[in-house]
Amino acid sequence: MKEKSKKIKCPTCGKETEWENNPFRPFCSEKCKLADLHKWLTEEYTVIEKQPLATNDNKN
Image (cartoon, rainbow, N blue to C red; front, side):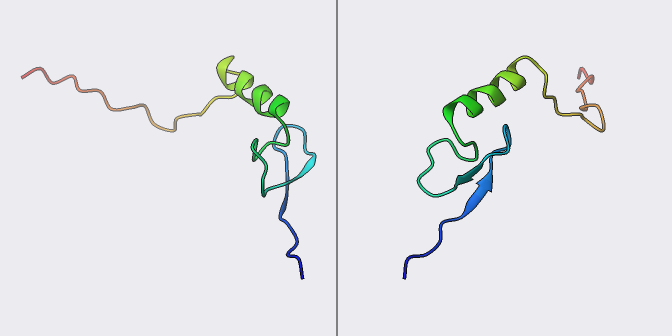
């Protein structure tokens, strides 16, 4: 009996796509993968920092 392949939803367009043998996973296509990358590069997506990074102001 053939095992059913896992299906996931593309985070960009929501289209259902197979996980196995998908070179663009978790995306459904190269187009969606590049659309996601574009949003990161243009800062449409950002990571919000809860606390500012510690700086090393000690000059010994």
